[in-house]
Length: 155
Image (tube, rainbow, N blue to C red; front, side, top):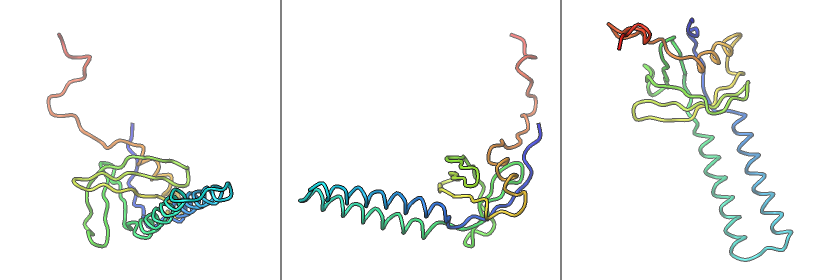
């Protein structure tokens, strides 16, 4: 079996992730409005409205500060490079959400974890297909020296 080809993909603030956050926030605002129309009042209503505003602010700030950089697969592993770390940092990528044109991946590295939204619109040509192959492939790992297949060992 052949490994996925090398691929480089730019990562930045995701338009679609922002749309999802706005949609969830609008649903929370609608729920508070429905609660008001149902006759709710008092401290519980104030608390829920306050929480919707605070959580919406945190979500907007997190979206605005999404990392930008380059995610690269060389056939044996992943590298994440940013303006502050141009040489890149080796790590692992695991797919959390696959919407065909949008991928949410979790980046794992020594001491660093982050969520990255990968969009088809950021890639050129067939690079999106190559990226999708890469996130679902395993790195080439050579067998340790002296290793034998399990069927060839004798009890």
